[in-house]
Amino acid sequence: MPTYEVAPDEAVRRIEALVEKYHGALRDSGVAIDCLFALPTVNKNGDDVGHAVSHGGYRCAAKVRIIGLKDRSKGMGDCEITVDGRQWDEWDDGERDAVLDHEIEHLELVRKKGAVATDDLGRPRLRCIKHDHQHGWFDAIVRRHGVKSLEWQQYARLALGVESTVRQLWLPYITTEVSTGEAPAKRDGKAQAVAG
Image (spheres, rainbow, N blue to C red):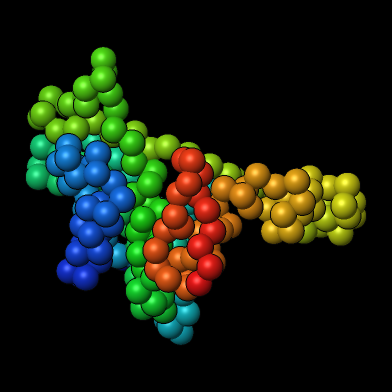
């Protein structure tokens, strides 16, 4: 069982800055985001036992959950991000922002008749949205079936750009973000790669 601690002020400030920069609807609705750090349990030899943070049985860097009404009534936030505290220490500033922003991106306001729905405490209601892409791969299937396997075909579309709309959608951002820290310019509503 992992141990938990309140995240350092730096993580909270990063979340606030990311919400301000990229998630205006959450900011405008006053969504309160709590943040915890998780550390794995260690055995008597000092070795990790299990994962600090996991999702579906797999180790992950962080995860977000919506906090229920009962806990909100005790003063908790509207949602909570749990971060692997050991990984946090290994990440640079850009990686920290990317992980936190990923978790915030899961959050969506619930709307009724165009207005933000609220709970019995008057707090904004949220839902977690799924990833744009999800991959479940078995190495053994690729070894047995090669390019005929769905695993290989997904990899080829994503990494190699073979018939890939994914590459057109976000790969230009990678080059631009790394080189300039700015999002690509938009022309006709579509992102354009910016030479860096």
